[in-house]
Image (cartoon, rainbow, N blue to C red):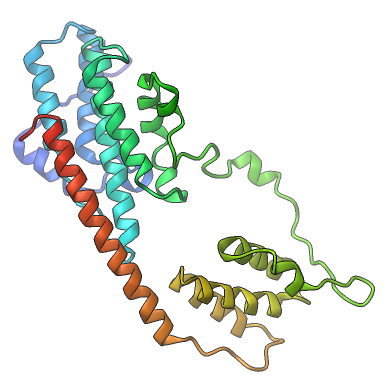
Length: 291
């Protein structure tokens, strides 16, 4: 290792780190876990798997007791996802501790317990860009210890979280597709084969690639969003896009009653998920022997 980390800190510093964002915006990694990873790495470089058991126990205790705010968001489901990412990082740090400083194998009960907890958290969160993009690093850490096929097939992990610079450069140039008598296209018949998000994504794609069908595609997308009761923000965005079209003579007035109803349902679901996640976290702490 070219540089050695200075990981000495006071309790005041430790508590302050818990309130700072650090790398959470980029990797979802709480600051306290970042410090512990640096500490583990330094000990591993110097002592290998021959670290004083009392030091290992201290690090283990700090991993268990680390507390952090889930992050402020107007979307309660996003708040739950952020908290799930941080709990996944907790289990990844456990795995790194046991395997790096204790020489534990994948079948070690401590490692197996952390892998199991990580998998349960993953399987309890709906897949999406968030939290998937924040789970790549902890996934690789825990994946080293996943000894069973079932654990390797963790739900919610995407194989391609986002476009790289090279794929961005390879994107095709946006084209305007003409629809007329010589090039007919029955939009309503085409979209009748799809429902929900599948229909909405196709309609938005059509709206972005055909000025002829743009208004009709956005109008149908708005209807699909309302029928699915899925996303107030998307509905509002689509209405704005539709009303901004020069070809639109009769604008759509946002349905405030529907928006309030869907938002209330989503908030209630978010509260329920938060309670379930907190209950699960409490049980997880008990299983790890903190209580």
